[in-house]
Length: 359
Image 1 (tube, rainbow, N blue to C red):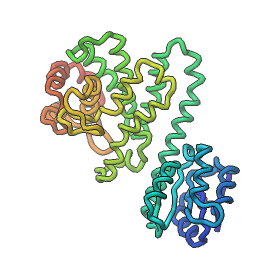
Image 2: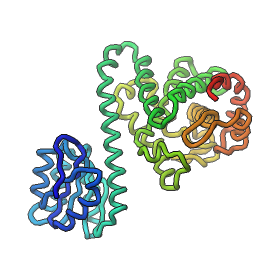
Image 3: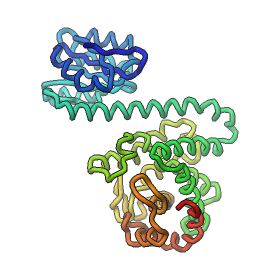
Image 4: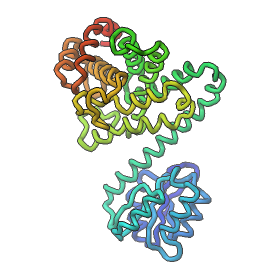
């Protein structure tokens, strides 16, 4: 039975000439999404053109009478539909040339028949969540544009306000206090102003780097709630997904036009991507070694670990100050630049004052 609600953007469109295949696919998703079924490519294309804003995903068969799935894709690609709606190609043919063209035309994934329900559900739902998150971020940015434009003469102050709002939203989504990003800002600024790691930098550069540090975890907006707020240990697969927040952070930052025009953009992208790199190459995503990691990314990396260990999180209690310092020195959270550790331990007495009353 067809399920379709034009009032919500939660409908999956299934385009397949085989009614059995349509019912199998519909059953996989019908408990979570509304379903719209059509039996040929022409009808599917017409449905997309008429009701594109209703669909959160399109499952498209390849071989159909009349207009094939690839022909539908060619039409969609011309209109850039795949930028807004993820398209999945369903086929019984495992042909590299077909798959190559499908990916060139913008499909998110090629799923082979016979479909494996739990696998298809996971792959499709993860992409739907990512597209929805990206759209929410776009809407947040659009909503803030008017306020940003009113104060265009104070771009740095405005950027920080926008950045703090987005970063704090991430923290609350992660069920943590928004104070985390404020402490990262303060530690970064203090280290740059009071240790050798800030030598050669102007006060303006230090201020820009400190503001950029607030955005270190912005990519977590693309991580599913089930992983981001999981109270227990992540599985290997979940941890791999969690690691993508570094790369996703850069992608999201690049979508903020006001930020791209500011002096903090390059710092923000570098910090978002590289704040989980480690001195010995044991970090991610690029496995940078030594001074391949910028000084500011190194500082934010250490500040992030120090703050995570010092505060209660959904998956752990706070450690004592002595235990935190012992773990960092022993490399239990990754290997840091020895000179950075020397500078950090020299001023840690002052930094620890930020944590009074957070136990």
